[in-house]
Amino acid sequence: MITSPSWRGKRYAVLGLARSGQATVAALVASGAHVTAWDANAAARAQVTGAELADPLSIDLTGFDGVVVSPGVPINRHPIAEHARAAGVPVIGDIELFAQARADLPPHKVAGVTGTNGKSTTTALIEHICRTAGVPSLAGGNIGLPILSQDPLPEGGVYVLELSSYQIDLTRTLDCDVVVLLNITPDHLDRYDGFAGYAASKERLFAMQSAGHAAVIGIGDAASQAIAARLARAGRAEDVTKIAPGLCMDQSRWPALQGPHNAQNALAAIAACEALGIARDAIGRGLETYAALPHRMQIVATRNGVRFVNDSKATNADSTAPALRAFDHIHWIVGGRAKTDELDACRPGFAHVARAYTIGEAGEMFAALLERDMPVERSGTLEAAVKSAAANARPGETVLLSPACASFDQFRDFEARGDAFRAAVEALG
Image (cartoon, one colour):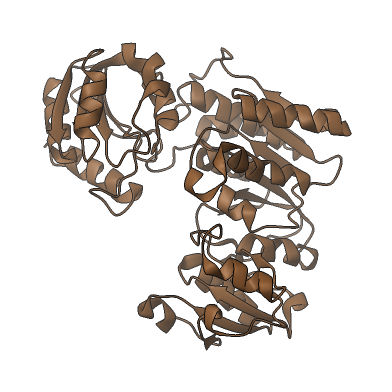
């Protein structure tokens, strides 16, 4: 695990004991810190060793060096934020602890990847390219194992961090050698003072950078364009690489990187890896050998000439839109718990859809929205949609789960939904 002598003797409260919280407690305790930990879930508390168990809201935080909260804790409305502020204690996350530990690690570089959509693919792709080039690397943050639970990289390694806005909110000193901002579209607005507040959260990653460190920015939306312009006005124009939307490029040699969104992801990864000093030939090999992440435009089977694609991670219309443009003759499974009452972002891909199959809470609403533009079946459940789509699809066509919705109406999370899609495909026989 990652530890730091700078934490020895300090006092921390840790609120939230899921994977990152457990890893945080273990790293702090191993470093000699005094830790108070809490989770409402008794089973999670039972996993803790070496820390005092107490709710930080019930104790005097005066003299603590930090309150470390899970990114899932809504600090805009959770009372821990005011309680810590009254005691003069910073509220931070595990990424900030990693930033504090960097001086004690072997010399390395950090790439931070953020954006509303495409973060996981781009993070995994940068890590894969680094490994292809023989550079020790690992992915962490909002992907894979918690960063503090992983062994430090040897000298010359690259930490590639997928960073949600929630994680950035809890970070103060992370100076990334490369920051990648893919896009900013409305999401998670319940945690912010409108869209502007959400965009400002993303922009903070650049504010933490030292001058001369690289910035890679997709300029396909107004908010990201504005950030690129502000960096230029601040004298950082030479640091910025802009990734324009709609560029025509040959993706035929990158089987796991199809569609216009993956063109942008690939271009951003190329620019980031070049800034990290990776040779062009290694970048090319990495793009060709990259395998798609589960639930992200993942081809799970080809049956009777029909391709079945699991894009369960597409939990909003903006993330589904590029998937509809990646294939022709699509049998589109869409629905779940809607984040909005429209699918306008998907409209440019409607011509690619042979038939839609609506599921979940949003099923009827989406059916009403879509039936003017395409044939629609109100399937209700994912299993029923897969069976019907498989029966209707012809060789050369694609059955695509890209729900444009959260999963919580019928599934634990988007991973469970994607696993159910794969199981339904396998059950076709």
